[in-house]
Length: 187
Image 1 (cartoon, rainbow, N blue to C red):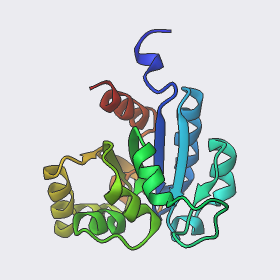
Image 2 (cartoon, rainbow, N blue to C red):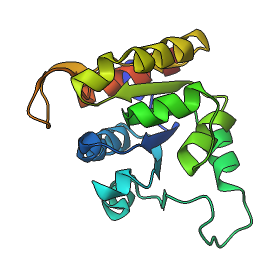
Image 3 (tube, rainbow, N blue to C red):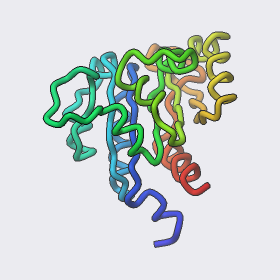
């Protein structure tokens, strides 16, 4: 195994899943990270749970999926702080216009946005949304603002979107997302 193949081995990767049809692709991201030896922790928004179940991502990650800031826990740990401090890298895939906007404006009102605000690890957003949403000046301004604060972005792909239109908005390929995480951790 060469150095590049070992970058993720033993690393703690937090995968944030925000609401959008591309949520189903987060399963392949979690699976690919586990295959490369990463310890994977998943946080899902309420809207993400409308597209894919936490059980799917729990099974693939081999860890409990965190969904709610106020759910009952066996330990007294403050989960968003624990995950934020544990993370070697944080990937939000898919990243909706909503989560991008929340973070850009300092809104921390759910487990995902709160944990992003609390982490000092590299944070990478992989947007996925309708092409008109993605090109919206507000979304683009939020992306520009987050980039100015050091957040990383993996551009969405051009192609046929679930809404039936063609354009830029497809979640980047799993391989590309994994490569970006590896690159960030190799710096």
